[in-house]
Image (cartoon, rainbow, N blue to C red; front, side, top):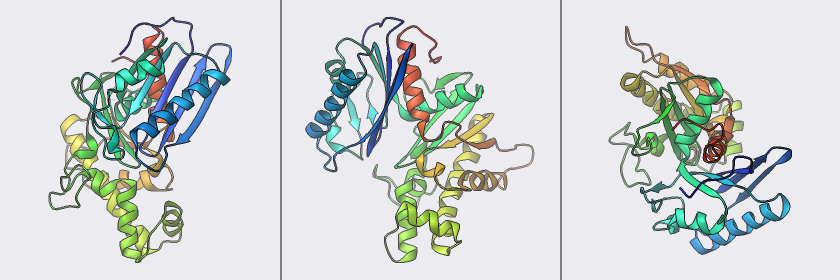
Length: 307
């Protein structure tokens, strides 16, 4: 995190994903700035950083400067802000992300947090619930835990996507077998559907096949929802949250997806221990972006998130 920021300056939230980046800037008396761009196909660090720098210049030239920047990141970083691993863009490993943000925003306070943690905080704040587990289903599976209004655990992000739900399951991009992400992420679901169908399946194909009740689509999504339900039940046993919120672009784009997770989880309840309420993310695919904005607000001394 870099230094303080004036309370009345504009704030910028940046939600960094494996394939695209969303930005939103807000300031009193000015229309909000919204922009989404895709990373270049080649996972090359220099090209990525040049693309990001060009977008920052575009923001400044077209909207104006910002006083604080909050960044939601899917990559694993150490306490100093260095990227230790990011399978979707391996070229970022070893990047001094904190230093890079200072170079991009020399006149602004900056902070980085896990995208799942920020999504959980934003959703919890939005629904007014202090005890929440968030599952973000997209290119990977992010997650966050909010307990008594605060993000936990304190020293690292909640890597719910790397909970092991099947020791003999598919290999995850982290190298281990059976991670929730290896079974229930968007790409994992599409791969499973493609194997069953005998041809590659796009997201639109899957959605259409699910609508038409085609077995290759229904079975692929059911396996995903079953794995997510297993995670919900286990997290309920461990943490007993009031609510489990399921979000992310993949989950949000498939009608009936979250209700199926909720139903499957309820079927696994044991006497005297009901599973948490499972509901769809109120902020949809923008949960992490809203969390990044609140992180930026927090830097200005304004109404930020309790950390």
